[in-house]
Image 1: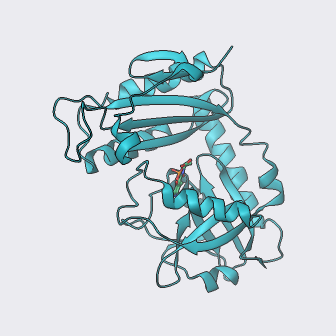
Image 2 (image 1 turned 90 degrees about the vertical axis):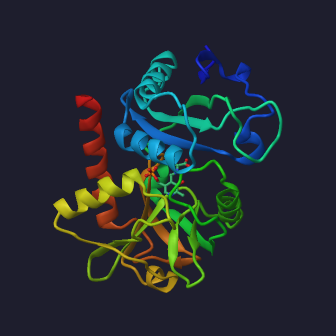
Length: 288
Ligand code: PDD
């Protein structure tokens, strides 16, 4: 059976799912999105994702979106209809399809809501065993990276540069040579003095849902957790590095720009935090 997608109230085989060419997501990247992990058929940390979605909508003044309760029902329904045990739910809300292409907000246009699922092994992951290689690239994004907007061209180019360099992720770097975040993940380092460092939330990065849980789990383990900017040089010199995202949970970073991080193998604390996150997510899945 083909996978089912959701488009504005209808559940449709994904190959038949359509939106208008006048949709503002298509014309202007005028929309927002979320990606949440599914483990054992349950959405992980979905309240945090939906609350970030509601904030993104508010910040862009996209009004009359279906309620977050309704969206959660749609997500659960898609997981059920697609028999998804492990993977991702993607959802996107745009300012809708007006009758013409005009930059200003259209009047009386309902937002577009689409959602679909993707099968993915996120727990039994090869990348988690081998670790990933990262390159650094200039951060070319706009000034409101805290909004999870579908305007992802800078991230697309960053990820492609990483792939062409034989790497799996790109860490984007600001003008002062400080790492902002990954093209689709949060960047963490563990210093040689065992301090876990990630950039503080601001308009310069997306406030990662996984990041927040990982910080809590790390603090519970007695690790010092610091929110501050770190430079590319500090990252090269770190004991460990890792990335976090809903789509990959935690992945150890074993090299940055071809320089081995620590021993050049997945770090011990990165592995521990991955195990703790999976435990936390599995328990959350069972109790939801
Ligand atoms: N990306 N930073 C950026 C730029 C991201 O795109 C993402 C997630 C994150 C991590 O956020 P979270 O832990 O809430 O997933 C950080 C998703 C997975 C994506 O675009 O596919």
